Image (cartoon, rainbow, N blue to C red; front, side, top):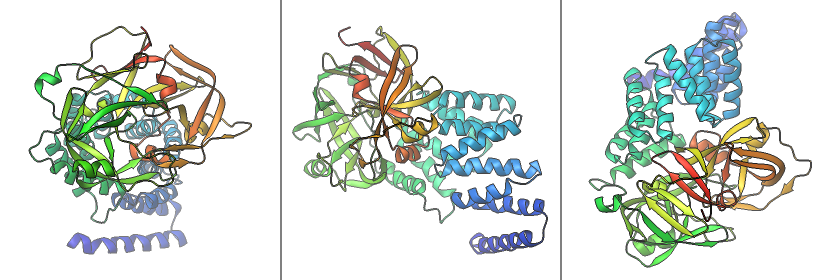
Length: 504
């Protein structure tokens, strides 16, 4: 109770000091007070206000004030999804203080937010080499290792970061995500609980609310093994046929022993999803809610989260499957929202043979020859790196449920791609209509040295909401137009996408 009573007086005292500083104190004194005030606001998770206070303090001539203030600018901007501002400030700051390991680490955080994961990982390792045991560098390495499906190594790095900074809530949150991917839900719930408990009591951010809801959901599994299959099934490969409808892969699946129904194969979604009607028919009860984000004007969307007793695809049966229920449903769409699944979220690697219209799933894929091997990262979604116009690297979501090759509006702005004539498009996604979508001709897009689209027209979409939810700027999406000429293997064990022309 003492902390709760004292805190308003701290705020009032700082406010008074700020007022005195503005009227009669030196600029250095004012900046120092602003820095204290900004740090307090940041600790209270009032990031937008902290950002402005850090910016005011950053103008100090004294580097002992200006450098920490500018670090605060980067950290605050990242917290509220102002990735471009964070990246600009981090680049400028690194030029001023290149030997400061904290500056190097926040620059790496900014690189991560830009979707340049390879460069960020290299800088985290550089910072750790300069200052062994640095918690923020260890935390960055943990995220990078997790994105390459090195979950045991990622957990070791995250736990090492926690030993250095046990009261850093963000590290606890990352530990929770790693445990969740390991399907160790009890430990994941404990880590998310630690994260929430380290936040101020009045934190009502979406991330905090999501974490509280996720704790309830994970605990609801009790002694049940999540996404369970029997030992024999785990050693086998399963192949099922599919059909293509409007450039989408349709597979038959069964929920809770009910009739077979159509599911879209959608690697652009991080959960199995069903409609409210299917949930009602199969007796799937909502447990809590979650946040979803996709293409469309709705942006962030609250959906129900439940659990399937069983999901059967071909001869493969999963038990205790997390599922998003599309309730409330979106209105005004040209088609009913469909059921969807991704083998990747079920712990399976996969091969999609578009020519033979066959889907193969298995925990381990055979080491088959392929024409093209592309490194793949898994940061909630599967991602592959591309190069735009020869000088802009960025990561693209691999989306079997999507239709075109697209880039984000932010990416288009970053490469200064301004069309002489904007060709408007009518595009709808999982979050409704994207009424600002347009076609951008004359682009070049390369993936390694093997796939090269020259003088190509890309669709430009507003990906702001999914970028904020994912914590980095999504560069774009590769869908059916990119994938369909190939036999596509998404291999989780090897962290790569393999492509061979269909028929090979």
